Length: 302
Image 1 (cartoon, rainbow, N blue to C red):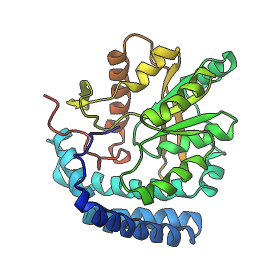
Image 2: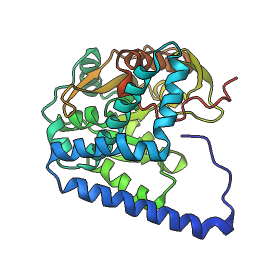
Image 3: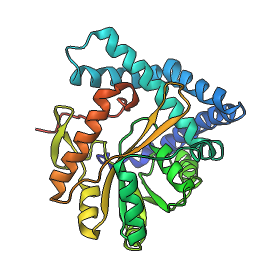
């Protein structure tokens, strides 16, 4: 969920469609080229491409540096620059990993998720209790879902439609290939994921992007509009709410899948603040693994 853009001018529609088509064609070209390479080479290649070419040209590096300066104003500039560089590399690696719809899940099947939330998840499934697994754009957020699906969990995903319809069509297919049902955010997907939860299923949610008119909570020491959806769903359907992370390892190719202790039920804002605090602790420990390229703070929080 994100801030809704102004309605498009109908006169701009043909130009927008042409732009979307050409942009998607370029993306598909990169994907096809990368997928022709051996797995490790493709991941390194797209990481390098986003770090050195796409990120700077598209303005992602500039945005990452801006966000880093907001959160770490006293950090030396060269240190912030190094974090932005590694962030962009991680974004690129994550992108092509998630398009490697056979290789990536197969590699993640060898990972055993651990942490206090892993046992809580197992117990909840045995009891038929729904579970909402919550994470941010950190490391590769699909790594843990793929590892859990390989262990037999029926974990669905909730996604936001991309503005580019040509890109969106194949983007959704990559998520479906990981196993477990996927649902679009908004009214169209609500009925499906509610049925999934009511049936004792598990659902993954990402919660760390700006949501217009959402409550203002603290994230990394600054006010940030944060959706309460995950906590509200957990309270409404008596679902366990578990923060989790797919943490990229020093080799750049493997992951540690960590499930933290479930968030204690209280009220939606308190529970969501606990999720923000969980993610903030991870970001402060390994800032290069978070997607600083998002517009997380937009200046409308006060």
